[in-house]
Amino acid sequence: MNPTPTHFSRRSPPQLRNGVYELYWTFASRRQSAFEARLAGQSQPWTSDPILQVYKFCNVFRAADRVSQFMIKDVAYGQDAETTARDRVFQITAFRTFSNIATWESVTSELGGSPRLDHLRSGEFERALDRVKAQNGGLYTGAFILCANKAFGFDEKHRNHVALFKHMFLDHACAERVLQAPSLEAVVELLQGFPLMGPFMAYQTAIDLNYSELLDFSEDDYTQAGPGALRGLKKAFTNLGDYSPADTILWMVDRQDEEFRRLGLPFRGLFGRRLHGIDCQGLFCELDKYCREAVPQLTSARSRIKAKYSGSERNIDLFFPPKWQLPSSGVIRGSRPMSGERTRRQAMVAPLKSPKEVREELAIADLFA
Image (cartoon, rainbow, N blue to C red):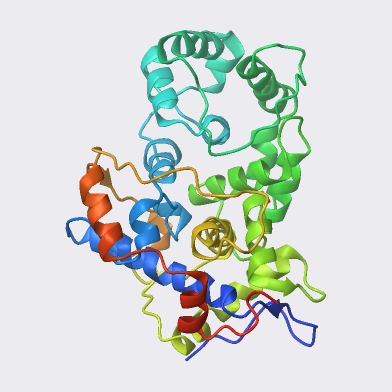
């Protein structure tokens, strides 16, 4: 039985762009099936979709991505007897700011344990970052576009962020205020009120905090569309009616069971866990990327996908928040990227479909209207 829609009624709904809207659900089904095939120990390719074989896409469920997995297991649920709840809020916020596993592991090694507010107060955290930057050549991932202004007057980005953390946690009791927040939206509003914390980074950090034992809000209480999701929304819909981007994302959360069944697409979720707001938000970002290859006639601020799948030799022991009570997990085995010759053979066997073929297969009459 479908759950009764909880978010919207008696409103002008978003207007679907036939075919691209269906691609949203098709991508979710195929990408999750590839995740399950890899989890089951199958060898490459884990999908017959030639676009998914060649290019890099995030997991359907944000919590299953490699960086989020590290954050959940090693940061949000890290085993450190000296870490307090206030320290944990700082750790999660700092990790998401850099979003770089190598940076976190190196800083932890330099400090002899997870960074704590005492390390921030004494200057040890900043000195550890200095050494890691010199050793590793950088501190940040390219996954997020961070506010790059010199909000605290420093030329180096990480010094501005250290000053931000001091401003947040030592001067304005951010950790205590997060722990007392009445809702997920309140956490986002609190975080984005600080310099260098844009709305989308504040939302991503709030979701990370909510993975931990510190908070326990529904991920469907609030969502926010990032830049990539906004591009995906424009491709999936001709207009949003009187819905906001956030409304539309939560509308998709409500429709998922109906749409997977209507389109005949297999989708078992994450060990039975349904898509939530953060996942449907991320799927719009991935749809934008997917359409650049599948339907290049749809204009976009971005022309083609830059990142190709390169593989990783590092195993991922899947670990999800215990409060989710997922019945199973497993190990994602490390993999090497396919050789150039093998990739070329696959492209010959399963070439990218032309826009006309996509239109015919999905029965999309107005794709290019």
